[in-house]
Length: 172
Ligand SMILES: [Zn+2]
Image (cartoon, rainbow, N blue to C red; front, side):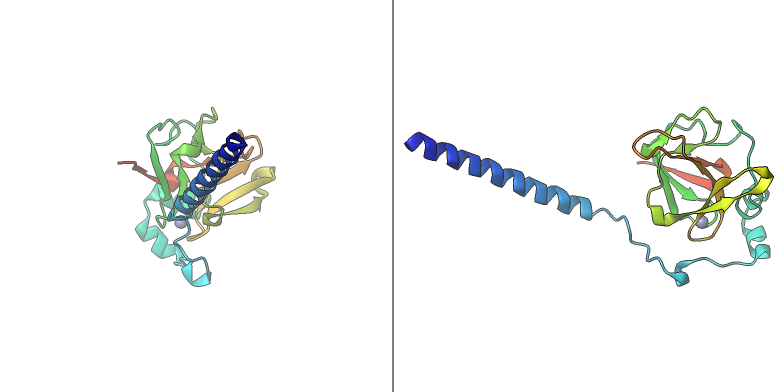
């Protein structure tokens, strides 16, 4: 009799500890500064093309504003294996984490998901006789690359991004 009470007690304690650690875990998760940027129309950067031309390098302007594509295996980041964060080269919005970067063999930096889905926009692109999903920065509207449905788990997506459209900051 005593023993069974002890067992119930022990089980209760176990359950409590589990519940407590779950609460602590979910709290620490929600404290991540994930959505500090308020997303509304006023948050978007609107600049004239001549202003963009002044601010960006010739290469950056071509990719971000004219929807250009750098040649495969020539960019700065396709073979970058450092840990850190990739930002938009046009407006410094956070876009991708090195944790989601993978070897696609394409010659362009490839990620299976953005840091926040709200930080990128996807639009149908029918240029060059192909139907592709274009990836844009949601803040400045800069062209980043394309997303294809042949990526690895957990999303099955491959965000194929131009190095020129990205700035990288190494983790300290
Ligand atoms: Zn941007």
